[in-house]
Image 1 (spheres, one colour):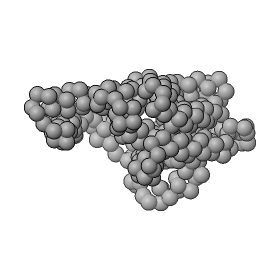
Image 2 (tube, one colour):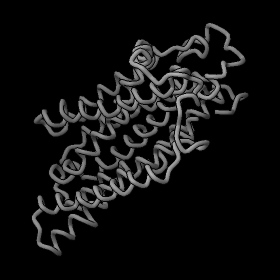
Image 3 (cartoon, helix red, strand yellow):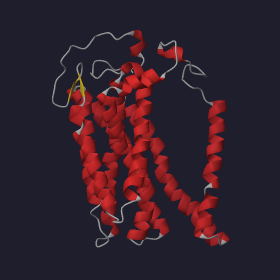
Image 4 (cartoon, one colour):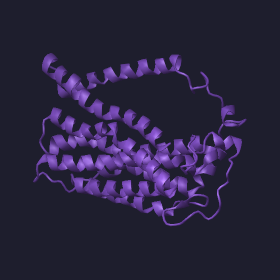
Length: 317
């Protein structure tokens, strides 16, 4: 489950890195050089291209794609339920401290990725005095790392789960968050007194653990609440977007010091890592505690479609 989620999502996020490079090299710069546009006008006109692509993609998805492999349109009965999701279901999930921790942690990894995707091109261009094309290429390296880094997180989580049981997934989550915080702090220590490639090396190391943590996160998601996997997934994904917005407006847009926001952001990520030992499942265990109750051999029919077994003996999703 970790590998499948991480590879699919990672290759989706890969588009973020490609877009940063493509927008500058293939659209903005040609508009400026060939058509004599100002920087501001070139950026605005360039945005029409992805807007048109979004429109075509939306129409194609609506008219050509199936909701599930088994049917063109999804119905709630496929999950063994008779009613659609309600506010009570969301409240039930949010009462679980493990869900709240995962929401915060995803804000620390995917949220950090989104926030840095926004600030890095300007950071490299203005702070290190790089050309716009070179700055975009350096910043896009973070998104391009998704070609393998998020998959590494999912694969590592699955391997540790097979080797040590479900507790291995929790350790994978902690390790990725901890080293993400470390390298984000080091990125915030790369001043313009050093060559720009110092910051690039720190960024690549940060990207590896940040994106791997996104993979380890969704290796844990199916176990938070087996009966409400869809809601858990949605709320944790929401945490990533909220984390990006808060980081952008509370750190990178408000602090005058260029490097301080990276360092403070690293502290918030470290807090997320230190929350990991608080997550505990009676039937699976936690980082330092073993399971306290035996796990049921057979799950209810409604749970079989959503619960993924943490042991190597059960391999179906």
